[in-house]
Image (cartoon, rainbow, N blue to C red; front, side, top):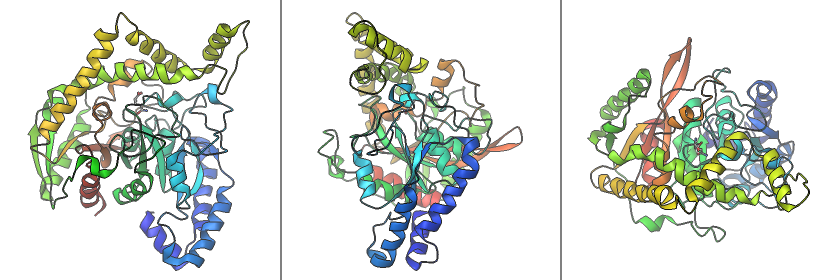
Length: 468
Ligand code: GLN
């Protein structure tokens, strides 16, 4: 099911938004007890589907492109009147007082919101095991993780409970679950999509991202949610980066020095196979050198916790959510935060506070920011010679639930995705092959990266290479 194929049926009236809703709702009712992609399933979706069905008969092809399309939303994106938990106990009872800009734009299209989805607490994680509300399972193999932190959204699209889904991507949280669940995951240029109404993790890294079955679907959604927003001063329009031309075929760089030994051999084989297919389709694949990229992980795990420690200071038991009473204000803070945050969130707040402390600011935070600027310059230099860059999305396929108990081993899985957020460039993960584990075929993604503002180029390439 794609947006265009559904819309065609909706216009013909052979299959209505109400049919689509009922079909997807029954998937949720039969499968989500095991998978747990959703935190809340919305009963008012039925009314929205009925309304969309009515509008198609009335408006015909004047109806908005996304009218009646079933969607799922990561539960750290505010939908007015709905419980927005960010996967945390501290926001267990928090009800969103307004719509995120991305949601407002989707509502004006008449999308049908099936429900909201599970995530690692405050989007911190790569497996959706860090949620305060239970683990989400990979629909392809229930003993494995769906990836994270937007694992619920990835699983929702992969299991057929929604046509598209929104996630957030601070260091790979849309691309990684897309890779593990076998779907398309898109992370826009930083600033292309408003962050207003996204529960903040790392503000200089966060972007809303899109899960879809095709690149065309991702582009349609991107065109709806992107653009300048007076509520987010970092938003930019497509004109900011000048024209980044589309081409018949593309010249794609592979940073060989960056494909580390930590990768599973068969995942690397899928990547090499993809290079062959690209060449067969007339694209030119060349080696490039990006020696700074491997510093990305180290820089990210300084910049991100620093921003996390600042962003999460607002959960103090006074302004939002949970309140645990102590004998005085300081004790209120301590008790609330001790009871409300999980282990991973606490780890990052402590780390972030440390790297920002007066004695260490220059040694850690300053250096990490400098690295980030150098990485950006290095990328810009390489884009003088290639149109796109490709890497694996992750070094492994979906791993077993509980397999990566040590946080550092999980952080290593972000090696290919975090440099993208540090530099702000757009990237997408495309399902590119499978590897066998215990007799089950698990999907593997390949990541494509465009220059800043090159979203249209990524979509153009992806439609030709993946959709056609
Ligand atoms: N896995 C990364 C982390 O744990 C990225 C998370 C994200 O993109 N939200 O920080």
